Length: 311
Length: 225
Image 1: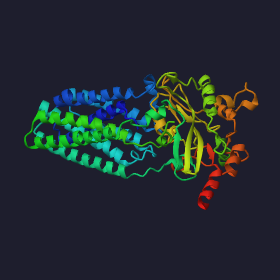
Image 2 (image 1 turned 45 degrees about the horizontal axis):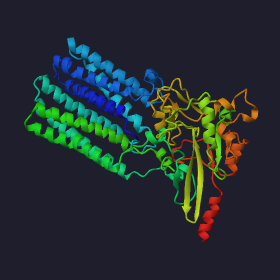
Image 3 (image 1 turned 60 degrees about the horizontal axis):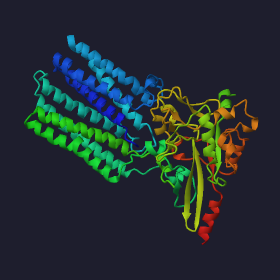
Image 4 (image 1 turned 180 degrees about the vertical axis):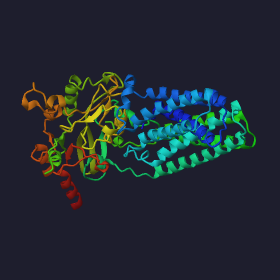
């Protein structure tokens, strides 16, 4: 598939916001550890900015953005439609959180609503890809696990940065603990990605030219796709990159999304430093963009069988 | 008595049956489709840079060419491909706006261009690559089975067929109700082992293809030699 930058930015930015909100809720529910001023001036505004940027990015995916409201209609059958409903819902509960944090403590039910909305949005987003049964790279629960885990990881690291910048938590040995958990999350996400790549390599395409054309006989090959100019089919479903570019981007994913941040957060477990943590997050986010790019590039669409050769 | 089953049995499903024995790959179905639909209710079908280096256009129908076998026992197969009007169309439930729909009355899969937001999700959900986003209008387009021809009250009755069917010089395209066992389309599927594309995804396409009978002769010759 052609990597779509609108979706790459939407899923990474919104994922990070979801991870941040999810981490805030998980930490604050058992013992209230965040100050109101931290929540109202750092955490909730950061989540809202990310969600807003993600929302703007998602509009660039549409050919007719002025009709976007129509996308909420078919929630009974379409995961995309469900996502279109859940995203504003998450923004709404986050705004509510911000308003509460200005004057009150965040009530328990609101944290639960926030957790609920973040998880729901991860499910909707991942299911959009996972439910396409003939894109075999996507059609697996690991798609949801990967989106969720990377969202939590990047959001957790952002929480670490915000806490470092604000000194916003009460009596919490934050830096070391946040660094330690960041390391564990990165490590688990890293292993999941390696597992997904192993699975992708071992996939056997269910469709081939024999099933796509039904031609009986051996050694079927296309001699003409029927057009010499470009078409939607030749643009949308291919990544148009060389093998070498793909392998380089895969290295960027490994190094930037996982290995460099792991080294940096491991270092900051023993000697906490805001600068190092911010650096880790920035590198991780660049890696995350590359990871999402690869998510599309790696997906093989069976329609490509019909578009092999120009003559 | 079960009236619900009764109607389900007679539910109309229009489609095309394409005879690979006689398709000569002339692309008349492609050009006639483009001509009718670019000026009909489904159009215009944009062509960008039509006369310069990188032309790009929207088409509902393509004729592709395949080869099979090993020299000297080879065959060239011309293979027209358009929307197959699946009975279980995976493109329809994913549409977030309801712009993509399957008509209950005749099984044609259509796009309501006034509702489409151009998110392309339906095209990802079609394993056949039957849908094309129009670059100028930024809405998803696809074969309509010439829905504006087949029910026309102004065209002569003999012309109330898809443009591609009328244009085909070898009658390689048979149009009809594949649920009606007496239709030409159903008889062709029945008698000449019509098959569906990518049966592995259980989309149950209405369009069927008639296999080249000469392939069996070639395979037999290959085994003899």
